[in-house]
Every structure is written in C-alpha cells, then in structure tokens.
Amino acid sequence: MRNFYLDFSTKIYFGKKQIKKLGKAIKPFGDKILIVTGKGSVKKYGIFDDVIKELKKDNIEWSEYSGITPNPRLKEVMKGIEIAKKGDVDLILAVGGGSVIDASKSIAFGKYVSGDLWEYFVEDKNVEKALPVGTVLTVAATGSEMDGNSVITNEEKKQKFSIHSEKIKPKFSILDPTYTFTVPPKQTAYGISDIFSHLLEQYFSPTTTDWWIPDRIAEGVLKTLIYWGKVAYRDGYNYFARANIMWASTMALNGITATGKITDWATHKMEHELSAYYDIPHGEGLAILQPYWMEYVLDSETQERFAIYGRNVWDIKGLSDEETAIRSIKKTREFFNSLDLPSKLKEVGINGKYIEEMAGNLEERLGKIGGLKKLSKKDVENIYRMAL
Ligand code: NZQ
Ligand code: ZN
Image (cartoon, rainbow, N blue to C red; front, side):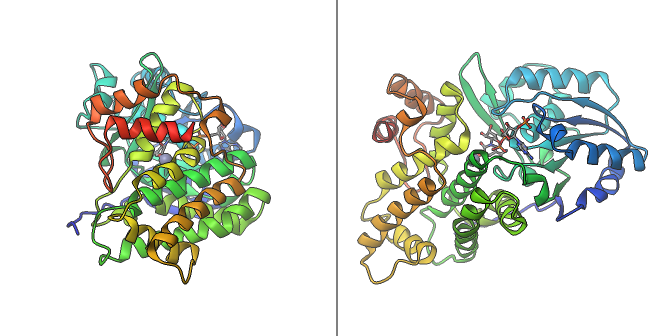
C-alpha cells in the first residue's frame, strides 16, 4: 500500500436547483467569465438560460465560446485560447459534458502558454498557471467535474492525449441531476460504461487486498451503477437513477478509489488510440475492450482479485476462485450488453488495419502499459485482435 495525498478542493453543489449557487461560486474569482459550451444541447434544453439568469442576478459579465465537439479537438482549444487571451476573463465556466469541461481546462492553462500547447500533452509538461475553471455538468460520465485531467485530440497527428494538473481541477461544480434528464439512452450508456471502467482501472491492481477502503467504496459505486444504470438507460427522467449515476461519475475519478493503490489504466490507453483513429465515443470503446482486457490478464496470479470482484460486486457464491473470476468477466460483458453496448470492434466499423500502428504508438510513448499486468506491444495487439 502506498502513502497518499488527496486534494478534494473542488466545491460540489449537488441537487435540484443548485444553479442558484452559481453567482456565489463565481464571485471569489471575479465577475467576468467566459462560458464554454458544446454543439447546442445546453441551449436546446434550457440549461444555458438558467445559467444566464443567475449571472444577470449577480451582475456577472460573460462572453461565450460554443461549438466544442465530443472528443474535443486541439484546434477548438486553440480558438478558445485566442478568445481568452483577448478578453478580460476571471474564470472559465464549462457548461456541458466531459468534452466541454476538458476543452475549458486546456483553454484555462493555454491562456498562459506562449509556445506549442501540444508539447504539454506530448511531454507531460508541468502546468504552471491557469485561469480558474468552474463547471455546470450535463452528462454523467468522465469525472472531469472533480479531477485535474483534460483529454484532447490532435486530429492531424491522430493523437488523443491527456494532461493532468491540480491547477486545472475545477474550483466548483454544479451537479443537478435534472440537467441530465435529456441525455439520450445511447449517451447515457456510454457514460455508465466510462464510469464503470474508471472504477475497474483502479480496482484491478497489484496492491495488497488487505487495503480495503478504496476497494469497498468502489464496489459500492459499481453496484450502484449495475442497479441504477439500467433504470437511467430506460427511464431518463427518473431522478434517483440520474442522481446516483451523476454522483457515481464524480466518485469514480475524484481520487478516492485510487488512494494508496497502484492503478492500471491500460484499457483507457488502448481506447484513446481507438478514439484518436476512429473518433468513436469513449464509453463505446471501453465497453468493448474492458472485458477482453479482463480475460487477457486473468491468470493464477490475478485470479484472487477477480474472485473478490465476482463475490463482492456480482454476488457470485459457492464457486472456486477460478470459476468466480471467469463468471465475473461474463457478468461484466452482459452488463454492458444490457445497455445495448457493443462487444466487438467490427460492430462499430473497426477492422484490424491499424492494430499494429496503435499498439506501436503506445509502446513508443509509454513503454509497457498497465499496473495489474505490464502489457507489451504484442499483448496490446492481442487484446485488440481478440476484440475484432
Ligand atoms: O455538444 P452538445 O450539443 O452539448 O451534445 C453533447 C454531446 O453530443 C450531448 N449532451 C451533453 N449534455 C446533454 C447532451 N445531450 C442531451 N442532454 C444534455 N443535457 O452529449 C454528447 C456527448 O458529450 P461529451 O461531453 O462528449 O461526453 P462525455 O461527458 O462522455 O465526454 C467524453 C470526453 O471526455 C474524455 C473522453 O475521452 C471524451 O473525449 N474523458 C475525460 C476524462 C477526464 N477529463 O478525466 C476521463 C475519461 O476517461 C475520458 O477520457
Ligand atoms: Zn474514461
């Protein structure tokens, strides 16, 4: 078990009508903001109007940058940086899902970068300064509302890389589950698969199983997703389903389930390659790859952890460790399928053409990937091929 430091500094306003706290949350940073949004959903469903009403009430000036696409592009970030550099901005307010929040975070630190912004992603450079970022979350998925990550795609280079810094962690996030009522079933399922995968990436670890707290918390959140995920998928306007999924999103990546642990993240790294090459939704790629990764790394060394997962999360009883482990992977795949998520790359139009290239990219940049098992280029190719 590792020692750890945890920064929980993001203020969370959770529940119906918490937008009313927006002015109070912004004021400590100033009274001129840049609002960043996506392609239009927040305007269509009235969330943007709610934001503007609060800003007017509290005499906060705003300018707006809209049009961020899912899997946000570097060129969109660069355009946002230009706006932020010209204007007098005290805070960036992201109103949207993970893509809008991630773009906002990169705009926030990009404002102070004079050289090549992409170098920060490639070389994992230290972020020294950033504008404060606040969020109004409208999709439960990434955990970006309470983490220091920003994931950006450089289309020309076919690279989807992330940067991590406490400097870009949101200062506050407004989490009103009713703002996710209108998220379509497909997008809801992508979000659930992303949250599920975040938890598994931290759960499956070589850290001793005697260190309980992060894993017992993760199991609770996983069980929440298994129960409420199906409800949210079928009945988007169910408040408790949306509320449970929204808080699961935040809990899965705010650091708490990684405390004291070595984590894995191989599946995410492999998925980011897929998104970079094929622009598929992140949650869709994860739903396909995660069970194959599980099958690939399951052996006599890792079996115990899979068996704990099977017993505590899937309530599998009366079987040997090996049988429980195998059953737990089957259950995981069935869960994704119950949300109509695919199990094969070919279902989303991906063939074997770039497998070697994608695996090679990972090896070149990161060497072996993963924490539970160290995966070589050959291993990564094997997992992609199993998923074809
Ligand atoms: O663009 P608009 O019109 O807003 O539509 C969006 C978009 O099409 C729509 N949407 C958002 N709120 C809605 C809504 N539709 C109806 N009602 C609402 N209330 O949903 C679509 C998807 O939005 P997006 O922000 O792309 O989804 P998500 O939150 O899943 O974000 C995905 C991105 O985050 C990255 C992913 O790789 C991907 O680029 N990730 C970020 C992480 C982080 N920062 O920590 C970690 C993750 O592992 C992940 O990599
Ligand atoms: Zn993810």
